[in-house]
Length: 287
Length: 226
Image (cartoon, rainbow over all chains, first blue to last red; front, side):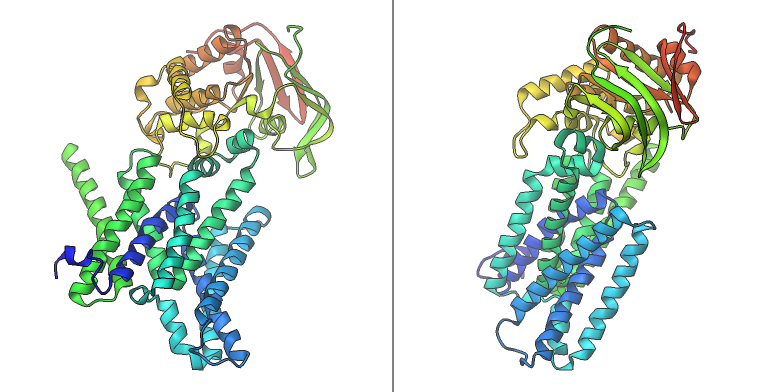
């Protein structure tokens, strides 16, 4: 199978490729904003909190006496992921403004708590363990048409929001004081940026799992940061590199029969090493 | 001091953070065309005064009156206070000064681009507009931030330690720029420094802040140190 066969709409896994591409195009833009705010570990903690929300709703489903495999489970998972992500983000933002201590420490503690709770909710609900684990692993390869539509709508809205209000978000991240003086809405822009990030993470975790979402949020912006000569090129490069990783990862995954998420993440890491080694080599030659 | 109406007026004010007073009985008025420096040791309350004037902190007691809107104030923070994670160009930093006049989804208009070129020329850095902001020297970064403040179209410029971390050549260029802005363009300029000798070389209107008090020190302009 050639690379171009993958891009054919008649290819069996084309919806999965499309879903992967949507994730890979939008997640890096979300990650780039979090990275600029020095909140990139939110990209690790929030997917874990979202996963905890999924496990919680499944446990609730089980505790209410409903059997697994019935319709509406996926919807419950989306709701749980969304509620937990937005509540987690709101709590962390509140603590950032009002609590003393290290923000990184709070993120690490929240990550540890969410991981532990996720496992506990899975243990409490052995009947649905396999389904939960599948959801948490992220089966982007098995995306249905409805899920693809939901992903496209939510990620389309997130992307549109990030592009339309790019100036406000950039100013708010770069210089909050000037943002306050010029727009009088410093806190408001932070709030909307975090809401967009929250939606992207919550839906992304359901569709692709925490590993792939965090990978796409972090790896492409890291490479783009080393290559970009301006904010516009940083944001555009982040998205395009994400897309390239998704397409390359999908090809290797299908060709070598590897799981998609880890393949994408490994490819992203190879790209980072290649970029930094090339830059180091160029600097050495110039010196 | 001239007799034109004040842009900023502070009367018998107590200023501080979180309800804790830092400065007492502050009396200050800033008029168009004035170049005023505030000097004092680190931690003496210079930034508290600035942040109160800019509306970031409430006045604890007394009154603060602004005759101009906050988006007519050009604020220049210390460049060291900005995050070097951003791969941002000098042009993009200056553009930010015009954001207050644009709708969120509006493209950057030609008139704003012309204004941007003008302010970059004014600070003498139009040729470096495409350079990465954080790869520039301390003095160049400071001038880019002044250009950003001018891009706002301000009636008053407030600069936090604009001469700190600059080489003598940049200090001279920035000092001359501040004098020009107040004398030729009639802008009110209010800046801080912990170096009293330096501020005396730029203006004779010097406020000294120490021990919770702010007092005027009127005197002759000293020789330039460069």
